[in-house]
Every structure is written in C-alpha cells, then in structure tokens.
Length: 165
Image (tube, rainbow, N blue to C red; front, side, top):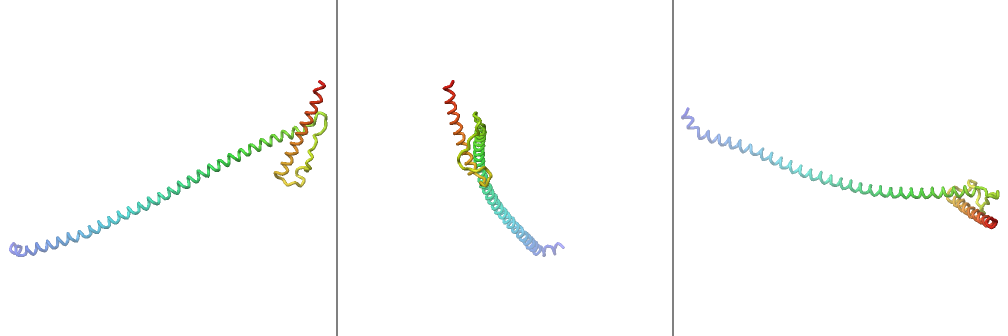
C-alpha cells in the first residue's frame, strides 16, 4: 500500500490542492458578497439617517416658525385686550359720571320747580328712535344743557342771597 500511495501521492496532492483551492476560492466569493451587502447596508443606513435628520430639522424649523407666529398673535391679543379693558373702564367712568349728573339734574330745585327740559326736540327714549349711539348722545347733550342751566340758576340764587346776609 505504501507503493501505491507513493505512486498516487502526486495525484492525490494535486487533487487536494485543487479541491482545497477551489473550496477556499469558493468560500471567498460569499465572503466578498457578504462584505458588499454589508457596505451597501451601511451606506443605505447612512443615507436614511441623513434623510431623517433633514426631515426632523425641517419639522423643527416649522415648529419654531409656528411658535414665533403664536407668540406674536398672543402679544397682539394681549394688546387688544388691554385696549378693550381701557375703553371699557373709560366708558364705565363716563357712564357713572353721567348717572351722577342725571341724578343731580333730577333733584328738584329749592324753589320747588321741576328741572327744565332741554329744548333739543328729542323724544323720549324708545319711542321710535333707533337704539344706539345717536339717542345716547342726544341724552348726554340734553343732560349737559340742563346741568349748565341748573348751575346758572344756582349762581343767580347765590347772588341774590349773599347781599341779604
């Protein structure tokens, strides 16, 4: 058997070399394919991450723009609310002052005469006049005229009484 082994050993060595080389070379091909797939996978992941980062940055910019617009809107609404409150407070002050003047004008004079009506020709409120600013302005003008007449009458009365004292 050793003689046979010696005769066949070069063929056997060549077969082992061919088979081993082919097996090694065949094993390299899947390894190379795997390396190419891994590289392509890493490249795809990097591109996906870049796309996601750009999308998130775009959304962040939009959110910042919306937040800035909301802040401006809130500031504008606060300014409008402050103006409305100031207008309301001014109107309430004028209405209270008008109420005071009307109460003073409605009191009878010391001589017992009723308060004279202003000659503005205005009808009583609610008798066909449209509700709104115009009737109120007319009432304010009439009340102011009555107050002025009452003040003139008071000054004349004081002028008569003072010399008698």
